[in-house]
Length: 551
Image 1 (cartoon, one colour):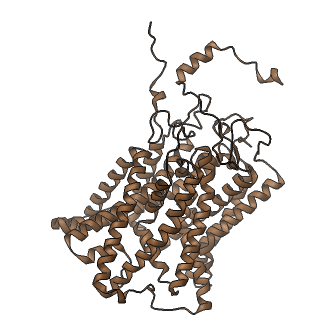
Image 2 (tube, helix red, strand yellow):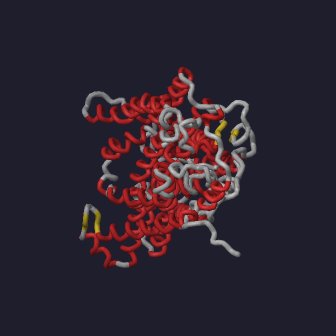
Image 3 (cartoon, rainbow, N blue to C red):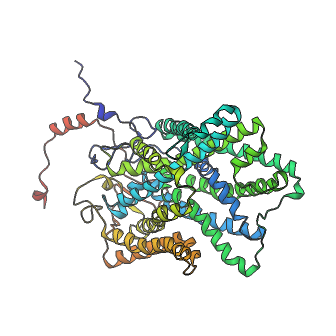
């Protein structure tokens, strides 16, 4: 006699890019906190190369090109720029390693590991803030990629120029077509899951490098190597005047990577080992970024003798070459580069962040689609060119990245002593160790407010005062991430010292992920049991005595 399997459609939810069962969705996990996308991974397969390729995708974009080029236009000498660049990117590497460890050890994404520090419900605070930032920048990056695609259309389909004269909601008809094409392409890439995304970024990073090297070699051959300079500024600062500028350059590098650095756990969770993640970070950050920056300044420097003026936008550089093959290759390359950074920095993050808010209703894919659709309604082409709009809107959210980072690091490494009870992150039981007070750790909430308010003021108001002609201390805004991170770290530890909340599980070993040991040490993987089958088993098992009877 054969029986019908006790399964239903709700039992066949796939994890993010993994086959069914990729996430260790245990039967006792509360579906208000867990789905197969948020549950600890059964298998962690990413190598150090996959992490290296992730950072390549994050660096190789129009924004990364302009940022790297701007470092060489600050009036510093070449060696000073190199020192600042290395110092900044090493800081990023250290912090990326720190935020990676808790997620790699437990196999859970950024918003879930925050439950240890912020509480089961409180983890939605950093998740929503990071998700909103990603929504805004997702639209911006898609718009920038569309600009690259426009160039290809105009070169190969001359009649498309007529579409520039027709506009809707501030964007030309051609712009809408390019934007829609890229929006759909990113949608398809994302919808196929994390494994497909991994393969894409594994290929995209080296492909962009290859084209950039070809572009640099071509321009240098046209300009003459003797005309290449590593200083793009027409003004040279003296030594003492250059010191604060060097520190500002370091802060610029850290700020540029602050978003993906905060939610790097979303990717580090896939790493085979923490050692593999650290190795990938080494090659992907100091080595990759230094080489990319040098390649950028060589290319930009060559535009002066070749085209008669300095061009720091790679899209415009390719457009100036004005040969069909160069425009096609260059345009599609920078489209690929921008899609790469958009996927890793602005699609994956909100996918996990919004899924964390309501796992039962919002899957990983649904979370990503919220970001994609929301970004279009923001119409980034109308405000991206307005620096004031970016400063006063995204500046507020961006200023909170530092405090959130500081609180997470203080909570995991100091308060929790790197010890996490993995299964406890997926229970709504009021007696659970991460329930704290109604699901919120009051110390983390207070630290966000106490550190966030002054950091937002520091990030936003100096520019306002300067614009009003009162006084100019706008330089302090360059360090808002460091100030926020330090305040968040110190204030959270102060509140925890006065009123300890985060448990350390001293003396316990079962189900504990201990970041102080090399091996992954979370709760053992159990056999995946379909929901209805589990209910049938429960019906056959005598009920346990009530908790009161055990007291």
